[in-house]
Length: 574
Image (cartoon, rainbow, N blue to C red; front, side):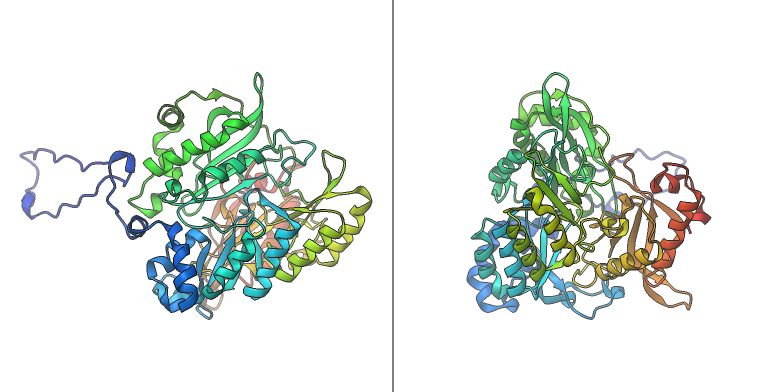
């Protein structure tokens, strides 16, 4: 809500003399920059460049100017701002160590290449789309490709000169980079087995399509205070991390009205993590897009724009509380009362990633598989597309856990498909370490990162599989290159936040602060930080092996890792 300067209290006779009012420097700001409160004056550089020109407009300049004149022709406000509205971030220059991340100016950190994010709403892909993604990687991205925990695909080494050709290739098969980044409505997470799984409560696909049609690329919603993350799933596995999205619709069955969605708002991680709040409202499928529109409009109109670190919806929800938020949504935006409804049940399974072989509603099967920490490449994605087609499938899905699924496989084709995937080192029956380890982009390409992540995750998986071959408990290990939590460190069994640490020789080296016992779904909560517990990159496998061995020794029957860490003493966790 808007704030005003505190009134000046009358000076008491016994109080020490104050400086004359005229001599004091009085600083004022115009509230929190909330448009609905009449605060339209931009209060920081980000708000100014958005007011100067809508980020959606930069595409024309990319195609007509920058792609022809090259990197040096790009206006700085476009380069580090508006180009994100089309999925482009400047890439980290090679050879700059993590100690300089927060010291150097942006132009010193920028390489003349870009990360490009392809948005894949609901994780839905056809064979033709996956082949196009693979071709772009091989032709324009030095064969790079990562599966993200937002169901997207991410490239690196993209040249501005190649963007018109890249868009042409992607859009020819119905793919887009529109608002894949920026202060916009980002990709809509959806259950990767929507309309497919036998145990589905409700299929949210039509709602995702309607939200795309009405809100994505719409100038009315292209200037938000910051990013807006959303999720829709009718799976009893609760498979879209609904607790940490700005808005989420979770499948439930109302005792009177039947299947619909439970509404959550205000989740998010980064340096000030908050779990989403249930509004207690049941939303029928046909009203999901309207309710989405109401919530995103509240964020646009009432969201805090003065300070970037308070410009997420979670801060408004925390300040208003769920009752006021629901009232404003109903009274000012929807113009009708929402129906009260039940909370979601506990997740129906331990893993939410759909890895393995599963029967579909129609009697065919879907097959989920696990690359290492989401790292793939263009050639491999092309091979996956060919495998799917050769086994009778034209549909694939990405997941919110950096995994992938092939749909619509006849029973007599399953064994052959599994063998083909395993031959590509894509595990259908992975170890808990392969299945549960996630990593962000890290210092290899990200300008915010302090440490390496992807290769660290890959080598950690290999080490743990060798050292603890009998370990079979569900476990998540999330590795992040900085405090921003793109890899969800606070809600992992073992969350690793990258930072520089001091080794046994007194040298500063790459390492991690450790969070233990975070979780989503069952008993959702944030991990515990053990005082002074930091590990070097080289000491990481030893540490994880040690703490998992203690867990196996000390755990009670049926006790999960997160439960054990909550009661274990600090010595056992060190």
